[in-house]
Length: 505
Image (cartoon, rainbow, N blue to C red):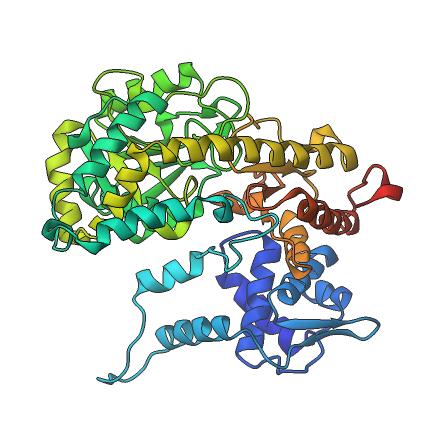
């Protein structure tokens, strides 16, 4: 006979279709806790018993329990089972309450407010982590190494007697001095073909994606995205009502496939595929450009961390490969300076500049012109290039140290084969049978922040590779050694055989 909990989970599983089975079971159990079917201090069924009730593997239940524990919903007591926590995570309680309010039919109440379907959907797909610093947060730069004293000096000078035009609304696409400094820098550093009148300053990559997708697509249009790819980009496209088509990635980058339907936009990371790390080959670049020209599609090139390449020559931008290429180039200062700066930029074809500038002004209203002028002077005086050179050396050393740890304690086959010695993270490859979500949850519970590779795929499927994204930029060697030792313990508990086990850090 099934228990009340078993009936609840089985009913919810019929409604759940997103993600792997253990994720669906986790969400069903979480709803049982939030809806007080499982009250605080209630003991959960033994994993073996619940697995039999649901007719799933015991490992599926164990993984769901581990994720519940990692996120603070339950507590495991050695020898006494797993119990619902007395105090549940406040953020999730608020999110659940909003979702429940939206889904429950109510009489019209002028004082009642609920999220839209789009808003609720975004929360359902949200993957942003509150953990943005420390070992091994992917993509986080070492913000303590930035020359803040120099940048502060420039900002203070400009703030003492600011020009009037820096203090009013702007619809020019951003500070002209910054646009000119960027054009000069990008032509040399990234082989981008542009001038200042093709650059629009944005508040980071997310705003750039939102601007492009709103201005150049209609609801229901097809958009190609790499699979796996950055979840933040996918969520913005979903919110704008676009139909996402996942395109597989291999060692040569995205694999264009006209059978997926002709896209309005094609989002790619050609210099350093996110998250796998491959580089888009010349043949694929030409194939992509040809396809875009034939079908009047726009390629959106996200060049998010190309400044950091640690061996060989840097790969030039796709945008500069051919004259008048159908490419919109996106860049950011989040990786080279610091994320909270919230400055990014678009390089757009000339025929789009005027229209996108107007759309940008109408949607967001230009601002932060004093900050943009300070950044322009920082670049023009040579501080930006000097900072990048210094950080490239520092990050190169940290990356080499992390790879040495992986090879020494796990073996060279655990460094993903697509890795091309670039960026601020690498992928620790795991066997197909390993549950990278469970490993990352166990690591987070012990203070180590890695992200499961399988969760970067648009839909959970058999071809999704397993692995862990590991950022190395914001952690020094000493802290890296300690955190890696903790991660090794989690891997061993997951059945991964380690080398030199007697000398674990």
